[in-house]
Length: 175
Ligand SMILES: Cc1cc2nc3c(=O)[nH]c(=O)nc-3n(C[C@H](O)[C@H](O)[C@H](O)COP(=O)(O)O)c2cc1C
Image (cartoon, rainbow, N blue to C red):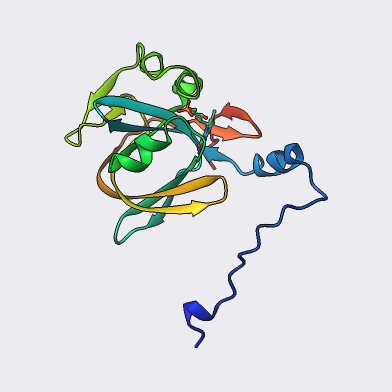
């Protein structure tokens, strides 16, 4: 049987000369995702940003991941504070997806109903689901860091989730 370490691993990160970045982004945008707001508590301040790279990694133990741009102003907060909380936005929360994607931190939280967790981090109210995580591992990956968290607490509701597809927000039609 082939062992995991025998499997070929592509380490080449050579840029493709045949595709321009905008074209590449359009291709990536064909993969529909949900939308989350990730929060952290760092040096006495609350931090938050919109994120759609969230994904489940492992059920046992419970691990999730997302990726953060190295140049992000929130990078230190999310990589050095020891944990993060993921709020999975509900369909009526599209405005929050935009609100948490830019601007000063204090303004991002303006008027947003939140709850402070035992971890001292904030989670948004009215969300489809939330995951409060201890930082488990950081992986360098190009111009991003993959942030892996161990889920210490979570919750979910019947709220339909907000979707993101081809650069537009929307909903998911039930099958
Ligand atoms: C729908 C959507 C999804 C996003 N997903 C990510 C993501 O997964 N990782 C990331 O680093 N930035 C992502 N961003 C961009 C960040 O939200 C934005 O750059 C960040 O809030 C800026 O925060 P800063 O001022 O702390 O750098 C996303 C933005 C939007 C609108």
